Image (cartoon, rainbow, N blue to C red; front, side, top):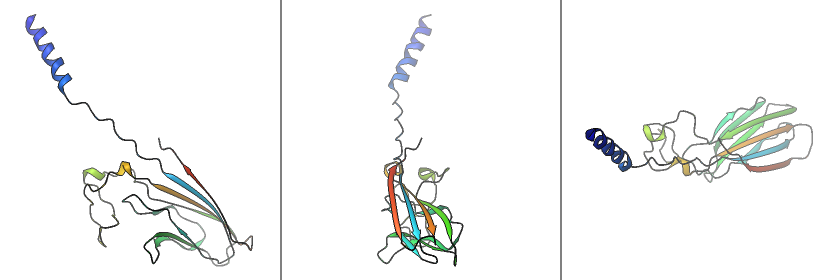
Length: 164
């Protein structure tokens, strides 16, 4: 009986002496920008994307359906931009979504690979030079109304969308 009590006491003390698990950081919720853009037929549009504080590049996640150009790139100053030109003589609506969110299944700290803005033309793993939970991702939704008005107008809203 004494051996059982001693073993139980040692087990309790051993468990109590273990370091506690850190509570996992919750990632920052993305900032969502919604734009409603009215274009003339065949008019090009360029939007400077929000400053990218993540190591992940912007990418189109919902591609426009009626475009001749719909691409993410950089301007002469190195700012990330989205460029759009509707199909020739197209009239109607179109929409795109661009974001810099971490992809599902991405294992950053465990050998995962993704392009890094300073990795050069061949990419490469970035090591542990950032904490992806401390960055602020962005989602940009752009709704186009094309060829139905002669005035080019832009209306935007910015909201923080919690991620669960």
